[in-house]
Length: 414
Picture 1: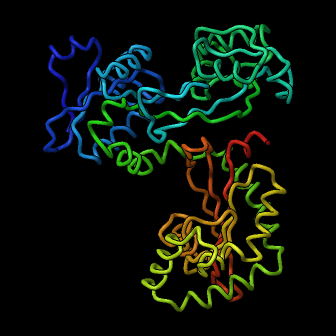
Picture 2: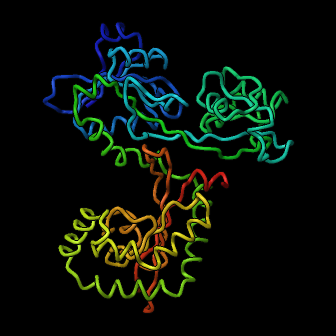
């Protein structure tokens, strides 16, 4: 149920105020702030919409909390969170080079795609751009802060993305760094033909909810419960673009084809399927629990049979040969039981995960590219590409191979 705030409350906040609410016994109305930043937050008529807004509303409704959202400039919003006048602000990126002191970030509701933009007449993006060529970004943006951290040759800043493009086509700088979503709007406003620009991927930036420490103390466990719902609500915002999918699939296929050339792979998969295919599910689940409980043990046979498998060593060599692009390789049989992996998989049984559900039950020659996942501990963005592996009989499936990619390094050619 969505309610419009009373006029008095609206004037007190000084911004359009929307109050999404779910049926709940909780007396507290949680208060959050945001600002207009299409396509993440934007007004559609009198309704606050946008990709991040929809994901945020979805999570809060799933958690059955009453809450309100008000508009405020970003600096004021952060200050109100710091002072405890608001419970959180969305969707914002971490400040480059600065650790948060007064709150914590959620998992991303959406991603910015930072791209280098150069003039088509100037050729493709040079490798030495960040260290030698003159570059620019929007004033006060995270892109500009990142360029400073990278010791780039920053030669000016613009007040808007549109002005930034005009600086570029006017020849004032060699390249500009900006969010791809802003680029889509800016070239129309600047009257610049897209064909006159070259665009190259640099990195992702997570856009999250920043919760105040005071709020999290009052609501222990809230952030963990919020994060548990984010994958259910933000999946569309974490998907690869068609061009990114093509690149990821090309790299993953090269790895798959290299591994399928190992004469030990198919026999190992056949042996594992022969063993585990006859087991009841409850037995495999019990083994999976044992695997997870003893994952760090050097003696647990369920762990050693995966960790010390000759194919796991082969996977490690393939990962090393691919540099930092390949973050994980996992082979599992048609029962969902891991055969070999590098690094060691977090669990033995894969049948409760999307990489199994979207491959094995659907027959041979299936490919599944998952959404982007973000590891807050390492700030790494990953994508898993999974392939079914066919058996000798028509229509038979022995198992599947998952290739995990560090998607930023894959897309920028590192």
